[in-house]
Amino acid sequence: MAKKKILFISQEITPYLPDSEMAHIGRYLPQGIQDKGKEIRTFMPRYGCINERRNQLHEVIRLSGMNLIINDTDHPLIIKVASIQAARMQVYFIDNEDYFQRKYVVKDEKGEFFPDNDERAIFFARGVFETVKKLRWPPDLIYCQGWITSLVPLYLKKEYNDDPMFAHTKVVFSSYNDQFQGCLDKHFPEKLLSENIRLEDIQVVQEPTHTNVNKLAFDYSDGIIFNSKDVDPALKEYAAESGKPVTEYTTPEDYIDNYSAFFDKILAENPA
Image 1 (spheres, helix red, strand yellow):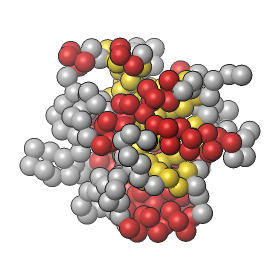
Image 2 (cartoon, one colour):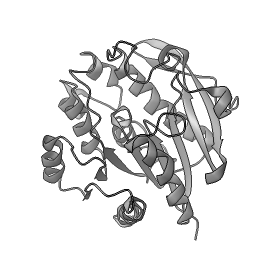
Image 3 (cartoon, helix red, strand yellow):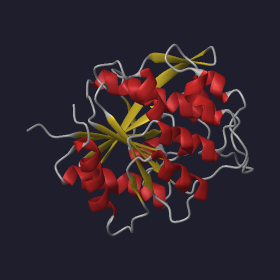
Image 4 (spheres, rainbow, N blue to C red):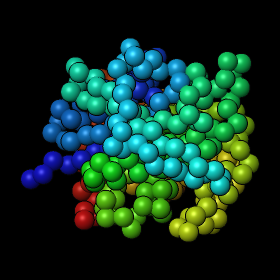
């Protein structure tokens, strides 16, 4: 039997960013799932604070070169890759000079939220899908974590659902206590619209708060994980009302086994 393919899309991964709850899981969960017999691919944004020389990032020319149009502007898609030798694991990085060259992650040196974080999330999600298509690597399941990945379920179910590469792919979204204050750009919903994504599909982000962006991810996910102890109670309630499979916060000692079992459960439901 062919190995199941799991695509990991993460907002943070250590050692490329400082260790945190999210970055730690971004690093060790893929390795743990690979050790359990699955085939994996891992993606994150190539933030400008990542030292390319120290981490031995290099551009993958055959995957780069495409332009993504966001808000009527062309943005070149650059793909880089690095290896975590101890884990026999490669990490692919989505890069673009307009969105990911600055030396900070989602806030500037004054702690101000970047005003184009909405477009950075759009570019990142679409960039991953287009890269996976070029890799010709159809995932059975996508695991995405962090609010910047919250558009992945929407794009999977609305934009790429007719693509044979993703026609049978399941998606699990993992929610964290990674709140941002206020809202994303007020024109965020308009920037999401396409032939396949209509206003009624994204009604929940007419006010694009952190809570509502997570709710959008829940709407199009096949399973939901809460990866922090203190997650917004409104999200807990929304997930419960959705009737979708949910996994609550799991201790660092147990999360690999528990999430592996959860992935298998999701994969077993309505298999293609």
